[in-house]
Length: 281
Image (cartoon, rainbow, N blue to C red):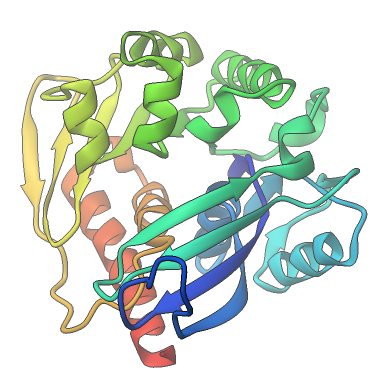
């Protein structure tokens, strides 16, 4: 079973077919979609194996809807807490499918207090860097990671965002990851460049996702491999593709000893999501 801890968010997607006209009207397609990196990973993972999401949403109807949708996707949501206001993100998707996010984390950051049964049955714990900066969820994340390491459960970390890395301070990020005892780190190309990643980061297997270019996997034995993605004709919206990749990678049985196979599975999961998005536009 995969256990993820982090955000479950109401994404308000603004799908643009032209550049924004500053200080004027711009036509767009606007819709709501369930989001949150940790929740996305759990939902994609649950397509093939058990997954559990740990987090907090508001007491509002939006929070109830998000929990229900995640449960319908097969994710164990029995430990999701409710208080305050549900997190929301405005996702601006440009004509090339790239996105800019405006974030209001609401009560997601207020997750406090670890329950010992959160990790029951877990084979891997997945965290995002989003959950390591704000309190009290940062303390909660560190405590859960420590419990996982103590129980022999590998910890996975997605570095999430170059803006978050800049906020934390480039010099601090690797130590923060190392303190968690991470077994695998996921970064995109921008995050890897900002951090100067050219090998294992924080002593962990490190996967650098590079969009349409081959990903690079740095193994703890000092070796590295490049694995090309599955080609796609048209990219509509890349939101969640990295989360799908992480789910596919971590869902590979024995991934620590089968890094090439795991990376191929990650690419396949990301490709499936991108194809779904292209078909729905």
